[in-house]
Image (tube, rainbow, N blue to C red; front, side):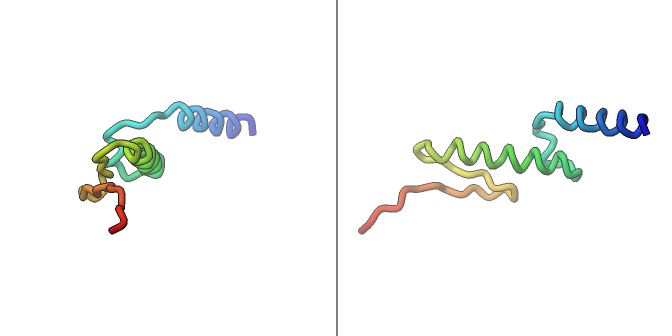
Length: 71
């Protein structure tokens, strides 16, 4: 029983200590995918406030963010 708890604690520490790496976009495991998605969301949120901001879509298509004006 103790061995199982120790193993789970080690896995939790490994996951908790993991940070985003650009290679996460190419990896297929759940942790890398989650980190890549979270990084993409944080980057998009940050750039939305800039003039001429562009969202880099995961599929490679840039999406222009523009202020809609009334005509």
